Image 1 (cartoon, chains in turn cyan, purple):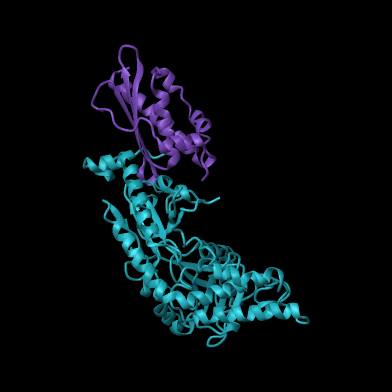
Image 2 (spheres, rainbow over the protein chains, first blue to last red):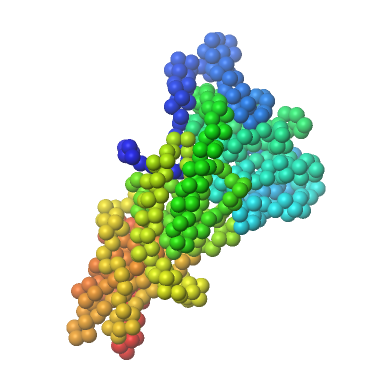
Length: 406
Length: 128
């Protein structure tokens, strides 16, 4: 069991369900358990009604029409459906997709899979702050380009890409614009119509809803977008995603969307204030590098590299009290340091030394104060153990050392 | 990652952290790894010239929890050993003692390299 005083600062990985979300879901496990596709009895009607309500709550959150929301099992499936679905639906028009090096693996690996099937993919580079270059994007578009897929906000550094400007370029060249909105939806005001987004993937569990349910927004008007289904079956979700709807999850997703909409403004200012405070306090420590963009970013994320300290070891000094993430290789499944940080131009050493801190709806000032203290103590402790910190302090140029790589 | 109790003990209470005077003739220093790889170990031994026994060992390590625990354990094992005995320390001994998971075996390899490198430094200083 988790200790009660454990501080959770990993809200970009997942968020806890809001108790109000759970409360809304409970009747749909036992009382209203019907299949939303059962059109001929009250059990089905109750389920369908609940799904309709949730679809509207979710559509309202992003300024879409409820008919433009396709429910999926999560953002990964929505990313797959959008990108593979567009590639297959529009293959007569072309086979070229543009994305960026810092996208989530759900987008990158989907693109890699499509490359094996004959698609051509351009992976845009980003600058030191994590932003794509709009001129580079426009220059990459060619007659065979069918899709631009660029994330709304990055999961590791929180940088927010210029959605409206990207959409204008796509409009000008008549190319579809898809965004992975996983980190941004429910946290930033988003109107897909005003922004010119044609497809957007997002998920409930990053916005205080349950895991296992997500959605793809697919524009129905100007342009009318279609995607080839990736899951065949009963023709649910307008034929784009078959499979019995996860009614309970969808109800929770809807409630989470409603709450996010109500509380977004006050939460964003509370969190950015708390985040800035934490970031400033941690940057008072010697030799800390900020990763990302100070202006164009999410209100709840900060990413810092503590030089000459390895991230996994650092986390071990406080992980019984504070939960967060690192870009260190030792914390990744691939045993490679964060590809996002490397794409910013950080050396591997700084990627190994990074921590990602992501605050959330239930984070308090007291928790932030405690976490600052524990992280700072951890950094000092690990630097006392670090030979390269000692060498740095002795004035040795670490770049001039001949390391024995292994 | 779930680590063994022994590993966590070494991580929380690392033994023999620090430096020996690397200019001294009877001190051997090994510095292995690279910052880009995410681990650097510096392991030092001080040898009693008369008996050839390692009388002190110190380390500093930049790395993950198992790299730090592996170096702490290595310094514990080195003290009181002859150079020949020390050269016989195998990385798999460290793996077993700390119950390192497979993805962390390279930390034990690094510790073995650090031991060998420190011994070789001592030997070359003393023309052995």
